[in-house]
Every structure is written in structure tokens, then in C-alpha cells.
Length: 187
Image 1 (cartoon, rainbow, N blue to C red):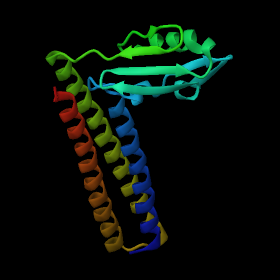
Image 2 (image 1 turned 120 degrees about the vertical axis):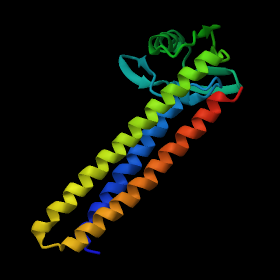
Image 3 (image 1 turned 180 degrees about the vertical axis):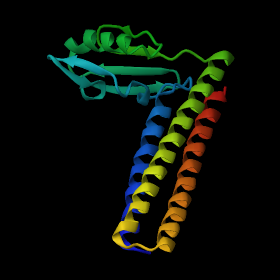
């Protein structure tokens, strides 16, 4: 196979890896009724005037399946952390006892579980769409290689290879979504 086509395949695969990682991180944010530190990813706290990730200003522990304990490195950070959690609107009210912040994750109702499964399916579809767009871009780049004297057969082979890679990555997205759905529906 032509080196130019190999380069396009490698680039497409690297971009698809990023798409899978993004999809995984989005699925992690969907709460499955169990406490996990990942639920707090993306929450930024006002730390002396600059937005800082919650995990960088505190220790986050999960003593049991329903509780998260946030222990700030500095006691004066309790109020800003509490405010940041409420503003993040994750559906859990923080309980501040003066030294730690406790988050109790409520059990999920059947209706809420179905809503979350719907969210998982939407996120998985977004992931599949992203991967298909990467496939389209890669195929367009491969077709443009014709101008650089790459044969039609090599272009067809390259496109077939892109399709194989695409299929493999869509299966990965589906597996992640399936695991998350199973996690959510487990009572």
C-alpha cells in the first residue's frame, strides 16, 4: 500500500481514538446511581481568582456506593467548592459540615434509569456520527491523492481499509454504550 495512503489511515485512526476517548468521558458523566469521582470531572472552582479543577484543590473519596466525600486541601475552599457543585447542576446537593463536603447520590427510579439510557443512546449516536465524519474526511483526502499519481486501485484499497477501521471503532462505541446501559439498568 502507498505510503501516502498509510499516512491518511494512521491520521484517521488517531482522530477516531480521540473520538472514542471523548465518547467514553461523556458516558462517564452520565450518573448510574453509583457514586464515582468521575461525576465531578469538569467542575471548576474559583481558587484565588482563577478557575481550577475540583480534583486539584481537594481529595475526592467514595467511602461507599452512594457517597462522595470531598476534602479540600485548604479549609477556606469549602464554600467555593460547595458553590461550584451547586452551579454545576449535577442533581446532588452538597452537605457542608465545616471540614468536608458530602454528596449523597440518590437511588435511581425506573423512570430516571430509562431517561439515562436514552441519554447514553444519544451520546453513542454522537460518537458514531463523529467517527463517520472522520471516515468521510479520510476518504476525501485519499481521493485527492490521485493528483499525486496514486493509482485508482490503491485509492480503492485505502477506502476499503478506512471502512474496516470505521466499522471497528463503531463497534467500540456500541460496546461502551452497552456497558453503560447495563450499569444504569442494574438495580
